[in-house]
Length: 387
Image (cartoon, helix red, strand yellow):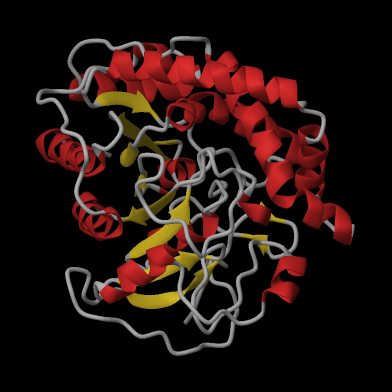
């Protein structure tokens, strides 16, 4: 397959069988942290790849999609250890954003997003721990879902932060995302209140001024009323996210990293060094705060779909340089971490283009309302249009 986006991992092809069902004929790309029988799993790192061996069974999510008729289109790139947001893996090279080739794809599900945006696949399996589906969906002009925490299977998938890891999908349109997500997760466990979504005005206030001038009028046309969601400042939300994430990354990967003295890329090496400085007391404090924050956010949502920006801006230029990329990612996480800390579903859909680059909007809903949330987003887009 010709791949001008450098999304696909260059593995020798192996036969992967499909069943029949609601996903018949949809081409499926799989982020290379999920096992696919007949293939290795690199997790975006050459040592992980060397140690992987050929897998003999599919990850649970892969198995569900294939049995429902999806056709395997290949394994796709991920940021190193799925722990970044730029889509620029130092070991396997950067993935190109098909929707805006001069901009970053976002990470860590960068290959998944590029495969769908570049028409190498119709759906792609990704993961979202801190924004790794939602940011690439916004940056590449796609639909994407971070499900309710625990709603989709993660067996046969590399863990990163078990308290925050989720398994979700990309598609080019909402109906396809809904169809595939229905297979991946099964029926909702909670209802979604009727009516137009109110706007999370406190989140919109965090969007960069130029981008806000472009996207806020669209958001106001799609919404009715206001629904502030920040029970604490986003910087505090991020502190909770970062402390819990840091402790779990060290617990999950620390022994392996230190035993091998492996060649981590500069960004991941620095993140790991900072993560090791977070103490057990820090973790205990922020886990207690997480419970309080979650209760407050779910109370503010009150069973509704809430319209919110995904990230603070359209994607930064790919050639902006590492310091600018890191600063950009830091600002993006301030918006992305709310759904993570509270364990909420968030569906992203295309909204506009800014200086030629995509920028999405999203709906955030109560836990267990994933499919209804996608349906509501489809309805909004059909009624009001987008881009």
